[in-house]
Each structure stands twice: as C-alpha cells, then as structure tokens.
Image 1 (cartoon, rainbow, N blue to C red):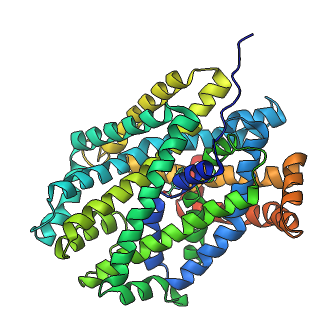
Image 2 (image 1 turned 180 degrees about the vertical axis):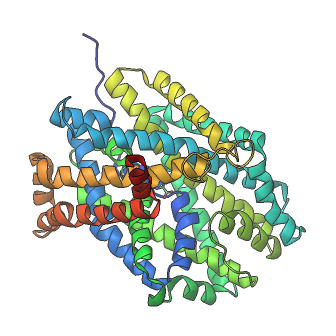
Image 3 (image 1 turned 90 degrees about the vertical axis):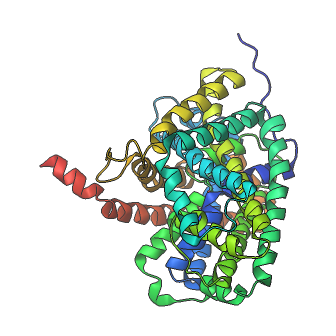
Length: 461
Ligand code: PHE
C-alpha cells in the first residue's frame, strides 16, 4: 500500500476566493466582455448577461464546487468516485479535463501576445509612432512564428513554476500576490478612464440599452460568455472545490467570486472605452480592440507610456491566474487518478501543453494554409470546438447530473442549513430546470451556426 498524504486544502477562505476569482478573471473579462457588449446593444446586453450569470452561471458554479468538495478529487475522479468506473457520468469529467488541457495550450499563446506587448510597452515602442505603424505590430506578431513560440514558452514556464509549488505554496500564494496587484492596476486604469474626456461617451456606449441590437444571437452570446468567464465546464472549479474546506459557506464563497468577476469586467469596459473615445477612435471588435486600438490610444495620451505598461501587466496577470487553474485541473487528474507526483505531472503536462500550443502559434504564419475544420485554421478550429461544444456539453451534463441524479445529501444539507430558507429551493430549481434548458438551447443554436448539423448530414449521405 502506498502512503497517501492527506489532501491539500486552501489555507484560508480568502486564498480560495482569490484563486477562484483569479481563474474566472481572465482575457474574457478584460478583452472579450467589453467588445461583445459594444457590439450587442450595450446596456441591454449587460442586463441579459447579468441574468445569465445569476440564473445559470452561479448555480452551475455552486454545483461544480460541491462535486469537487464532496469527492475531494479531480474532475474525472470525482465522477468515478460518485458513480463508478463504468458509468456514463464519467463523460462530463473527461470532457472538462480535456477542455482544460486544450484551452491551456492555446490560452498560453494569446497570453504570450500580452507579454510581447508588455515588453514593447516597457521599451516605449508605442510612443511617437503613427497609428498605422502601431496597428501593424499585431499583424507582424501573428506572422512571426518563432517570436510567438518564445513568449508561449515563457508564459507556460511561469505557469509551471507556480503550479509545481502545489495548492497552498504555489497557486494560493501566487493568487494572493497577483490578484491584489491586478485589482490595483484595474482601479488605476478605471480612475484614469473616469477622469478622461471620453468618460461619458464610453459609459453610454457600454451601458445605454439598445434593444434593437439585442438579437437572439446576442442572448446566446451572453450565455456562452457567462460560462467562459466563470471558468465553468472545464474542470477548474471542480478541482478548486476539491481543496475547499467543508466548513466553508458555499453560496457566500461562490457569490464573492461571481461578483468580483462581473465587477472587474464592467470596470475594464469603462476603463477601455473611456480612453478610446477620448482620442476620438472607434472601438474595434475582436483582438483588434486590445492589441491595436489600445496601444494607439495610449500613444496619444499624456502618461500613455505608463498606462500602456499598467494595462498589459494587468492583462498578463489576468491570463496567468486563469491559465494556472487550467493547468492545475489537468495536473490534478494525473496526481489523483494515476498516482503521479506533482512535479512529474506538472512538468509533463506543461511540456505537452506547450507542444500542443505550437500549431496554434503557427496558425497565422507557417500553417496558415492548413484548414482544420471548415475554413478555419488550427487555432480557430480548436477554439471553436472547445468553447462551443466541450464547455456547454460538460455544463449540460453537470447540471443534469446534479439536478436530477446526485443525492449529494451532505452538500445539499449544507446549503439548506447555511442559507436563508429560499436558498436551497431556488438553487435546486435553477440547476434542475433552468440551467440545463438554457445550456441546451445555446448548444443547439451553436451547432446550427457552426455548420455541425450540415457537416453531419453530409457525412450521412
Ligand atoms: N475565465 C477565464 C476568462 O474569462 C477563461 C478561463 C477559461 C479560465 C477556462 C480558466 C479556465 O478569461
């Protein structure tokens, strides 16, 4: 018999909240949320998004934390522990660990771009340049395979260095260092935004409700984003929940994480759009917003040299705390299910994620002609597959499982005992009916939109 050390737990509640919020707050908040809000009707979209967070995101986050805490296992092990080796319910465990690993591989490439921009900001390469030159830098970077590989390598090494330290001495310790800095950076940029001449225009752009832009597609987008931004469906919250003390008030802890995530996204939106309008630029969509528009804006603002450094540091920290949760979710699998030591599991998976990320980094240069799914390059194909299918599928299975099949009595008792009288029935209703239905609808439309049905139909003919 091998000696099994007692499972590591978070040293404090604050440590858990910062680590989980670190996972949730990422590129999704600072880069994606602002521009999809701008595109989809401002305030009207924000309203729908908040509803999605409350009725789908929060209940599923609680369900994932409950599964983790109850079983004290990685996501695959959790379902095996609950339902046995032969059970169908292993599927969500496998899908989410696979999703975590795959996202880890390409998230690191994008995070590498933020390091590249941080480096340029530190060198002052944006100042005194024409807008055209600055915007051209992004195309130059994506066209440069080796440069991206170098940053990807560096970023993955940072994640490795943190995760190898373990739950308390690695993830928790670094979350406690990085998250307060992240909040301080964001607060500075937020204040700067509010004090800039474009503040009002930025705020109205972000919040004025335009219900004509609130199409069904926008509602789907809000749902999908609620999932991604809370790191749901990808084993991260199950794994982090598995280190959570049984004494912890689950609703309170989840609420804090969700509120932090949402407030940070809204603050980032205001910080970004206020300065964009201050220099009279149009907010771009997609990667262009942070990697093209923002550097141009900062090159034209007084103090822009410092602001650019702060901004890309913020982005890099947000990406780092997210990516360590992805790496940890897959590392926990090798430790718990395969009995590997933490150093071995971390070296192996960080190395493998680096290798799998290579074609992502080469997607817009050497491998640009390699169309994997439809006319999508490698990067877009894996992203499409994972965000549109893996995450919603595992979310769907998890909510059905917890809502309909899992007795989880002691976890459910804790909710009943720990909250006001309405907490448990409300959560149970949401996880049983509302979340599965909402996720199923999103999945259905995503399948239609991405041509999966057509692809199947063609296969069958
Ligand atoms: N939640 C992160 C974001 O908003 C992304 C992420 C996905 C993090 C999956 C961890 C796991 O950017």
